[in-house]
Image (cartoon, rainbow, N blue to C red; front, side, top):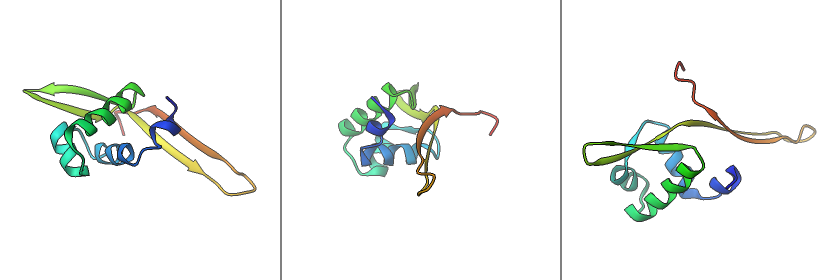
Length: 93
């Protein structure tokens, strides 16, 4: 699935935005963005398959975190560039 397809969903954009603030467990994330748990898990699976997030367990909670930085650049004519890319997160930032 391309990044365009991944970000074609408003719900996935909301999830990425929320995870940009730090790891969240599933029910906390679902409540924050206003989705039910199964829909949230579905979107998290798509993001995980795309390599943008990963999960880990702490106790009986499943947490998700961003593992790639996503950037969008769009410029008007005459340059007419459109770039959507994901890159590794630099842990030193």
